[in-house]
Length: 139
Image (cartoon, rainbow, N blue to C red; front, top):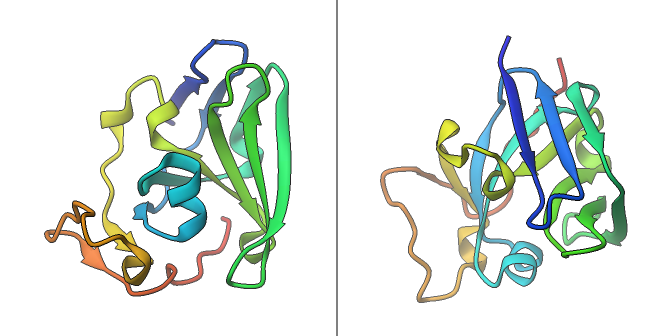
């Protein structure tokens, strides 16, 4: 089994994930653009496989999809780490830039490309989805 590690910019929040990575995507929804001032690179893991040390602050909002989304970030440095959604119970999105080795996972698709700004650098070798990803189920 793969052990994936990562954390925030200041080091107050660290995590270990004892699971193989699930789907990985570049997301261009407006929420992700606001979080990162760009698209975000994300990978999905089973929530139960993620062990966190440190305090993760939470912000909850309703997404354009209608799902309730909970964003997890470091309260000290503001690094956005995780995203959970009522639309994918049991699964957590991890921001790939927070992985100790962000090259360990390669995105396979661009999602919400209709929301991407004209200047976005979309990787055209990846699957392009106009809206969100197809539903996935926790194993």
